[in-house]
Amino acid sequence: MTDAMRAETIRMTGHGGDEIEGYLAQPIGDGRPAAAGVVVIHHMPGYDEETKEITRRFAANGYFALCPNLYSREAPGASPDDAAAVARAAGGVPDERLVGDVGGAMDLMKALPGANGKIGVIGYCSGGRQAFLSAARLPLDAAVDCYGAFVLSDPPEGLPVAAKSLRPLVMDVGCPMLGLFGADDKFPTPEEVAELEKLLTEHGKTFEFHSYDGAGHAFFSVDRPSYRAEAAMDGWEKIWDFFGRYLAS
Image 1: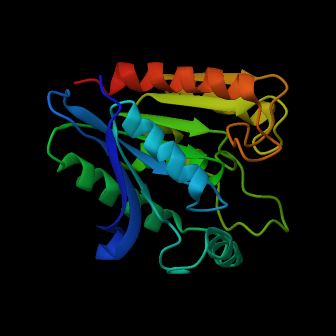
Image 2: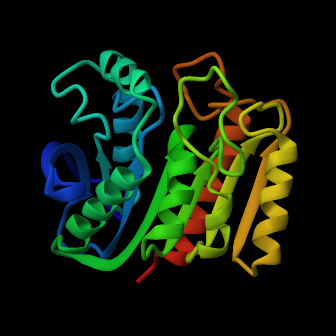
């Protein structure tokens, strides 16, 4: 398999027919197999270079990958830091809008030449919660939640996040799910991860969770002090195996 790719900023249709920015990476070359799509949901710090690198990494491994800029409406053309500040001040991205933006990304990738019609989603930090939300609301084939907070509980008072618990949606998760968590994380705590695991089991969902000792929140973030190489490397192996099983042609 070649790792040749093309990556570029595009305009895409999001929630309510809005035109928003997105970053699309796709494998190129003759003779490549049909490719699945992966929607990459960026973390709370925003649509930044780290997230774009993750998007390119999926394309290098044979997937179409698209990261919608969830902050396009709040701060068009702003730097990731400025856009994230504006979004935080507004309490984050509304759930309904998130679902519409991810749905638009799914439609775009399904229509690409050489698409196999299967779509997964992956999200980090706030995006982990949003990946869980997407799995409950959209016809996805696989979902990866990387340390998503506030899936089962509302944010504590004083935290500038308007997200609400997704507990009522656990029964609606419609695709296999992979969860990757840090055992030292506070959002979510190991206790919250264990409770989510229990609820998914009770509802008969297909899932696998992995927690890493010595890792806290954002352990995948290579440019932050929270990065934990061993956990991140194993996590990527889990991701490739999981998507390989559920998104293959």
